[in-house]
Image (cartoon, rainbow over the protein chains, first blue to last red):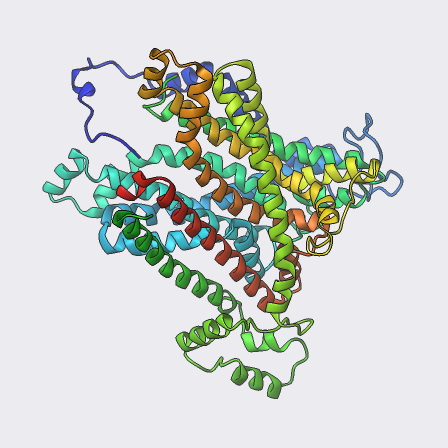
Length: 297
Length: 319
């Protein structure tokens, strides 16, 4: 993080009326169509996740032994799986699992990581040294390995699996926030607040956090994609979503058994994961550029 | 060969690694302690008598204070004793010694592929930043990063193993037995792992190369009339070679994690399969041992990278 404490240009520049949030939001999207596409995809996925019951044409658990491993048709848009369940309906319900998983994991990571990073960066000294070593330690664990082990201990299931993933992600956010806090605490307005006798808690909440939030937002968006892939991996391994509830990862795992007879079964859930992860990444990368004052566009 | 600043930097790095190793081993040790219920009962297995549970508690030192238990555990681990599997009774160290080289082989294969493909792609993209080849590479790498490794692995199996029998669908041959056979068996898993790896390498290399090519000293070289070719190969790449080291070490760590799932798809007897099966069967000593080996591997890779850094780039040591 290289940022000059006070940029001299700011003093010289004339005051420009800053457009309101809706306007800046629409500027961002018209300026960057890729981000707009990504956001549109995410809205579709989130809508599917929330209104899965209403959108899905069939009950995702409904078995039909008269129609097993069927190819796509007007009745079953994406065909049926090995138990005659409608793949399209399972895909839509799988979106709920994925969105729930990603939000849970990243939520846990934010709640754990951000305060720790703020404290480490602001306190400095031995507190920072100790927290940094702990963060180094947790960053040394291969994420999925630690998630598997913690899931094994907490008990198998989607919620526990994603709690573990959240715990594993937290140090990444903590490190990011720590680096920002380290820079921000030397800003003049922080010093001014200290002179007025503001408490560390007030300074952290009022001055440091709001100014550190932008890179966190970017990282959160990017982590959503990683969490999505982690959910798919853990469900595939049988540690996440348990049958008969559908998740994209477990759908792939099940379809793989029948890959020789019906290889097409594997494509839909895989593409769903790919497209959603891609959308999160597109929005995240675009946010990074839009929010970063040093990037030229 | 090393000056005092570099030596100081090295000492600092190694000293920093010590608390990380201690903390990591302690976390791994605590993993079993987090288990709900009495560990002795879990360790004794199903249908154990009360006497047997008591015996295990005494045998494993579970009646001792936590820190003593940790010390004992570390002492045993250093001597290669990682306890035994609850299911097979095989010493965990024996299991891991058998499967770890297989994982290492796949990871090294995948990382080599990622670098061999990713580096030229990154250079291609950066040398004409904003051009068609750049855009194409960027799209390719965006997809590569978002691609689920295990899914692409499965599709490879369907296309190249089931439809056309070019490669085996599952299984593994140890490189010590037959290197050529080993390569043949490991190709599909390695390519699946490298799909995202090469994307990562190409992205990182592109961005640092673009930055270098836009810098002042490169502008001077242009003004001097040096052909672009010479600038790119002689000045650009030399400046990003250190970044490449970071990318590779990061890649080794990522691939080590990603291989867990891919190993399961290909039924490769490696660390990933061992951890997953042990977790599903609640064979916790095996889980503990495997996680320990993985985390120590990552710490070693990071340490070696840092050491190489201070040797290759004297500027880093001076900071």
